[in-house]
Length: 631
Image 1 (cartoon, rainbow, N blue to C red):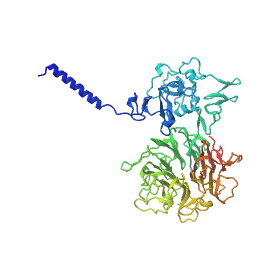
Image 2: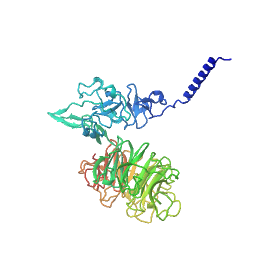
Image 3: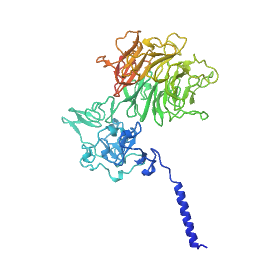
Image 4: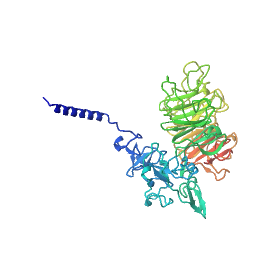
């Protein structure tokens, strides 16, 4: 028999073994990208722990996923991938741009007053820490000049009593729970800059070419003397255009820092203003945008993994779930499907967006959802009394690549078109009721524009409606071989959009358009009386019928009501001098009466109707030629 001591020892050993087994089975699984961590082992291989988050390690930008940057971390021995809009990480001041410091393992702008932070789009100035409330971004960290490495990382313009390695007291090295710098983190400010005895002022005062400049905002000296910007200078970093989208009487631009800029009709800008804007103006409250879509008197900024931010016309819930005539500032979209619906709309997974006078539609990876005025618009069963509500319903259209919409600012004239995954274009809406008469029950399938034509690779970002013919809809697209096609849905009205070959009225079904330059076209857009295409050499040509009231062909000296084959678009100074053919275009967008295009250097040029300042020329003068947009 075992002694009591042996039995007790065996029991204790058994408990230890059981505890070890239980503890082993409770070990948390490795954490994925972006989750909290303390040690590298907390993260799934090959991720590492940096600033308490699991991140991908890198040497250069090529090691990171598309859209991310290889940036410093809080550990000098490793660099990690970060989104351009993320807070810049750092181990010392050497990792931060000039006029910023490393605090709480992040780069923060120094300041003396709120105005200096506002100029950098960096919030407000904390009077105790003398740091702006919004940190330096990873994009700014990469683009702006840094502290010289031979002085320990401290800006030469900083006072000599600053610590030699740019570090703060140990009490402020700890990370605060909200990620903000500690209030005790006080830093001295740069010495004054003078020219001819006169003090230079600004968020980042500097002297270039014998005159004072603000390196934070001067587009000719952005962050450093002679560093010029095609767009706007924000906090010493250039913000250029990534994409452009044209609405009815306004224009939207996606900035390279994830911001959004708008110009044109007052209520459509997301700027809480009753005045039109004739130059591009940054929309407050939007960061991290991945795409922007100008819609009928409004717009939406799409964000990866987050709900879109929308504004503008809202009489039929186009921008918000509450019935308000207009949403002045960007508001997170709260539209949802009824609990009984399958599939249900996921506002965190939005790929494309379109809206008109009667409602809005968005797509995800597998389906299109619409809301607003029911019946023909949302493809709900038709009833004699057509309701309007904020419920998003699946249309049954399936997976699509693009959504586009057009309307004439009235009921029974609104159309939405989708470029399906198979390359076919299908359209529906109350503007097509003449082709699909309303009956009780499920609506007819979407009507195809390009019957028996090749599958398309892309289509115009908005279809066009010819004003002389209600329920007429037409659009153009580029097929997978690079050829341009234009097509129309037939109606009993004889007038058709003049965007066929040589500016002829468009034929029923569809026709191909021969461009002057051989090779695959790179994009196409349409208005009411013209169409434009980006040729293989990145020049732009337009064709159609010249209307002096809109001048959408983009060329001077054309004759009223004359039809034209594809003509090169001119870009000129505001006074129509110094003209040259428009080149280097990467994207084009069209609306009711104007076109805008983005160039390879991040500029935006526009031409056509300008009654609300939608061309961004600083005035409301119609332009028959393209002009460079003013920021």
